[in-house]
Length: 135
Image (cartoon, rainbow, N blue to C red; front, side, top):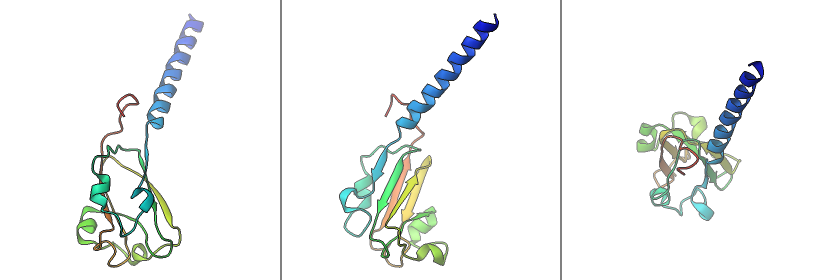
């Protein structure tokens, strides 16, 4: 009986690992703005429309280093195009950022003054993390 219980436990653990691995493999990576990146030349509402985002997906923001940045924003910051503190408003030298989406509405803006108002803002709705066979 001890061997049977041990074998059953091993199979159960294996199934859990398999299911978790399949779910992680289902996550998608999206380059914001595709080849144009994060800047003034993309209508981000149009870019996001038609895409099925899910919690756990990754957004990659590629932008001109030292000119732009990307800030995860609240709904109020998104609407007003104002960031919560001065450090978020500075351009960054990185030139790239990766963000994992959380379930629900995710807001992003360029924190450099005037850039959000000029169109550098993105609203993405991420559905609950799907099972491996639904994405």
